[in-house]
Image (cartoon, rainbow, N blue to C red; front, side, top):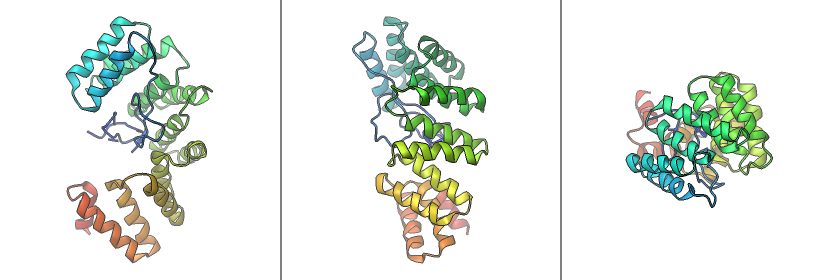
Length: 262
């Protein structure tokens, strides 16, 4: 996770690409305040670490050939390093090489069944394939690991995955727990705003959206959520502000097109 973003899963979208499940994708080496809804792989003083870091850097720059080369080198120099296999899986996933990605995700998890980063990443991948029961198992492993430094990420991804199945009650449970751990996590906030809007809890949707915009830059999705919310609540000034921002900042977005269709 979300929300993206090509828009593939992720939930969290890989690295700088956003997936339809905000936060449902996993990205190595992100900070705790990262707003993509992604969870990093563990870095450490290992033979593979330098290649993992290089692969991540190239992947973030969308330089896919050297990203793949360095991820493969990480696996070659340290075949039993879960982080190396997880990174290679993420590169394959970004390239649309799903069979190779799944094999590497599975290898990472087999090397360390409780690794929170590999489990979160594999769960995101499986959720994108609509293999929800399998995805849930991996999210739960990531959530349950007491050494997971970013529990709010798999919690958000599990919530986003549940929402994609139409299970709003379970989605809300996970998202609320994520926000208890990290109240400023943008993917969880925007997901809760969307769920609140769908449930016609417009004041709640407004509150979550305001919290989101206090910690993250506006996106076409967040502005469109704001527009729909304020149309219901009747704040014409705020509605006009959201519409203006959407037209000015994202004139070519799908959401801006919705304004012209009215």
